[in-house]
Image 1 (tube, rainbow, N blue to C red):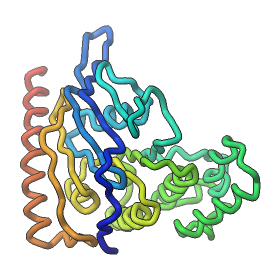
Image 2 (tube, rainbow, N blue to C red):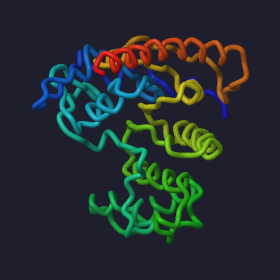
Image 3 (cartoon, rainbow, N blue to C red):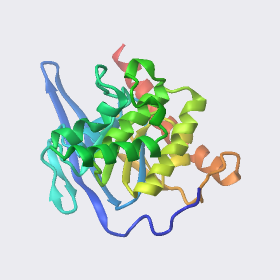
Image 4 (cartoon, one colour):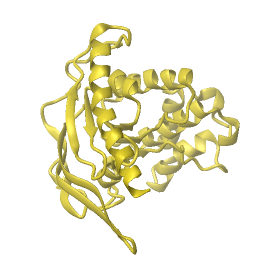
Length: 270
């Protein structure tokens, strides 16, 4: 796999403007996100990295339109996000497949909701089954699949609707190391072939470097952007190279600073 120089354009497809997010409950207020400003170009692969509780998923849900910001706004191609939409597809860690549907039916579900013609649905589903190496599993149910296969189906279901932006919330977090690497390589192949913009939440430092053009490191609560690290390494990336290791050390120091803040804040509440 080789880096595509033409994949990313200089046009910001996704713009996050001064996002703040506050959760209010009977116990008071929780400041989840603070002053998040970020522009993501069309075709770019951006990883969101940080310790647990730093607001990574909250930020992704705000981009998806599931959870409105307390202030600020998210723009996709200049249009403000106020709800979920067909321009953004979400892939969850838990797969979110319908257990009573076969692989084929899970992938076709969104297309059927859109009331596409049966022949068009069949062509799209058949193509995705082939591209994601799922042809032999088309009539299987989710309970009959491995974790990696389930995630392939979840990705195929999003690709069926062809959103320009894919939002991924730790999609490989529950997989074993070998399957995770296979799925990382598969995702990079999909990214290059389908030319998607990807925002990928992870707590894995190596994973973020292996996959992303930029790694956005977030602070512990309230979640803010601590630093954006550009990964200027050609693909496929060699984790044993000195450049990879140097970036890994730098990201480790940034994340551990926030992890220590988390531990200190927990100790103060005891």
